Image (cartoon, rainbow, N blue to C red; front, side, top):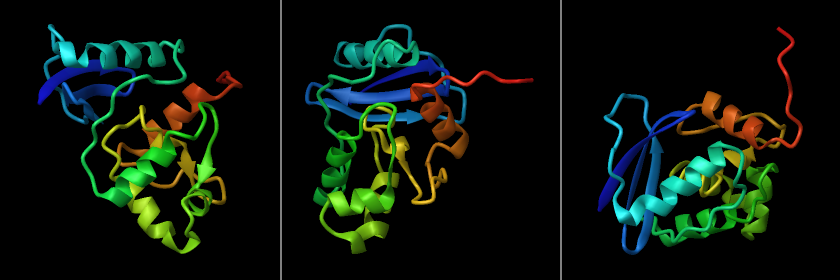
Length: 157
């Protein structure tokens, strides 16, 4: 598995993948040395993430190869259908997957998403509009949603 560490507005981000595709993207809470030579298998992912953070990309076009159960992969595939700048609730996601009663399992699978940002688990919120659950921290989820918002708010102070 090839690995690269890049600097993003959310912190040092670790990418892992191989010839089969991108396996994981993780925003770290600790410092790692930035990769100076990006492995060829990760070059496109690094480039597309940079475009995303620069506001130049809304849709990723990458070969994905996450590891998980069949159910998790089903949930992650459905996350790819949430448009940039939009959110849905965990309940809506469960309904889309065909089982309202599976809301906890859907939420758990969402939380195990190994491909942050590219597979947009940050676009899933509570039914009441709250920013519930995000493995990378709610401040990062808030940042991502604001980054994708079509209406940019300026700070008054």
